[in-house]
Length: 277
Image (cartoon, rainbow, N blue to C red):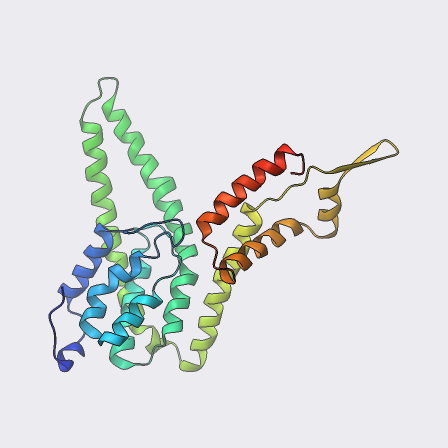
């Protein structure tokens, strides 16, 4: 796909044509290779492949592709901001060698959650329902084709420039970030982003993971649930322990998340039948 280039050519900045090509690659194929282990994570190496082909040696190319295989999930159009930012940082890394790989990885992992929250609220929960409502009103009882045509034109006319503007803003931000941030504060920023990402995961675990117990005790005519006793001492302790258990299986036993989903479903069914949960 890439043409062999001289070393001095590789040290040039990305041209506007190069950047537009990468953005089109991102927006047209937003989630190639989607699965329930990495979600959109496999897309990053594919999105950035032309960039790595142009700038990296063979060994560095393989390393760069491999380090972008992380779990990733965010709203696609708004995520253009993060894609542009990471591209700007990757460019600075290969040209000036003052950006470390872990910083790039931490920013990508830490910012996907906040960007997803903004994008889902703005695009998925606001823009799309409004456009669908207008399209349905245009269809009426007759099923007028104007409704679907309006929706397709409107959604493309809004999201394409929206994504392109955010991509370019992110690219400029990624390039200039290390000129604004001192090297002493960079490590603190990286740690803060990483901690923020961990905090988001912790909040999601507390909200989405609900472990219940059906075990009850009765004394002097008063029925007491075991789960209420545990929560009075340590709220959501069982949910926390189950989250750590899943983390242990993924990290140390290398169990695929798909099998954990199946195992959880089967376990809940079995334990419900026998009255434990």
